[in-house]
Length: 149
Image (cartoon, rainbow, N blue to C red; front, side, top):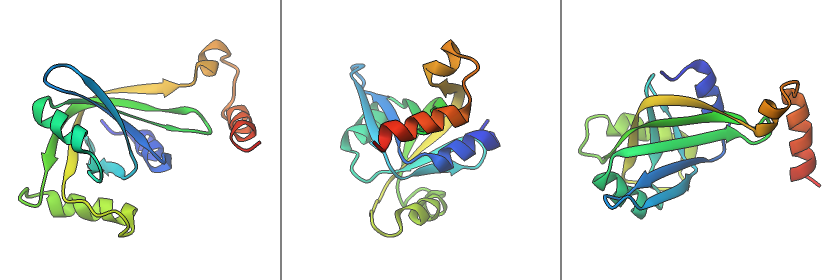
């Protein structure tokens, strides 16, 4: 399910956005800085400052996670089921080791959001659709102009 291309975009993304919903269907979207893939069908996220995300997942495991390369303006939206893991779970230490490489010891965390991916959808900036001749290099040049005036 997680292709090499999807993994590449995960590696290139600075943030992802994790959407959850409470049992009363109240949505919540939260930026996540420490995340990576785990195996071929799972995403793991360090729970650093995520009380609402944790509450929502305990009430409703359906989630959506999105990430893009901000310069190329392409990425992916992944949907699936999430569960909260703590040190009592068998896979916790292995997952924590993968995430700890990203934190470099700066962000302690004691739980992990583990997402089993069920659906994958590419994200493209509208310009790629409206102007199909648009190249990634053009997008990069325009993004640099916008982000670095």
